Length: 331
Image (cartoon, rainbow, N blue to C red; front, side, top):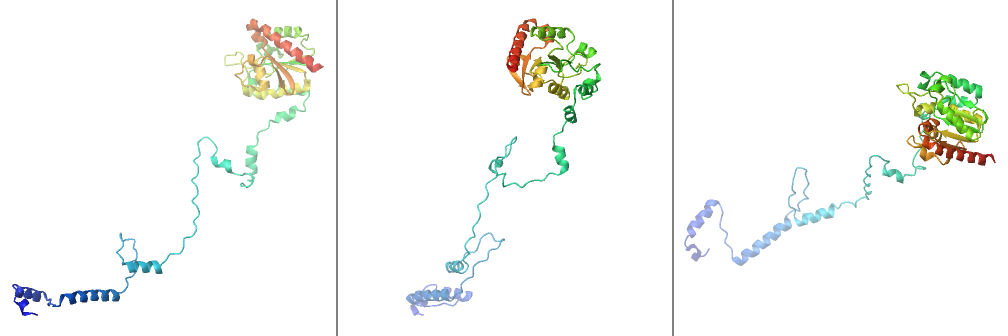
């Protein structure tokens, strides 16, 4: 240490402070101090062990800093294997709209995609449509058997208020078949169709065609018993009543084999043609319809014509259409 440095102001106090802290003074030349510091840092860096890669822990929020050499070592010695192919995520299922079949049904091949399903016998019998046992028996019935069956029929509620069933009347091999709605009070009492004022008008209509009751003409109704309301007044038969009684009329048609059918009124027309009950007679007139491959002409019911005299001319036009159809069928 030079004598000049020792004589600097405050040198003694600085030396005392270093001694109190336990730090001895190191005196080196400036140029030698820089070289020694650089050499010492390089030596320590070369001798320092390579830090291991930090291990991630689920409880550690952020990893500790890692030296660049350690990162390179991790990449070199812990290289992950190539990723396996991943199947594409399935497309989202289409949203089905309420009230209709799902859209995915359109893309299915039911010939190959679905396996046959065996239905147990019990379910199969439950899903099978019910068959009217009367239909098979009617196929073999002749006139006396059919009349007896109708006389004792109790297939609907109309049997509870009847006095007589009204089977039908006329030539059983007639070429003309006239079909009305159902019996009224007079018909229910006598057991014969169209015997009141409406029956007299129908007889006159037949005579204008060159036909009369009992000769080449048969008269029947859709139902064989009188339909009435709670007050005892005549009413049109219900759909259930028509369905219960129509097999009898169908067997009559098979036995008669008529050339032309004439439906008298709305109920007879819509029941035979399977039309909407709201269909008016005016829309069914003037056209030759078909029932079981037989021509059918629609006209007004005689009871209606008694209340609406102005439509008698329209009824005559309907009868003329029926006669021309009959002549064409008879050639």
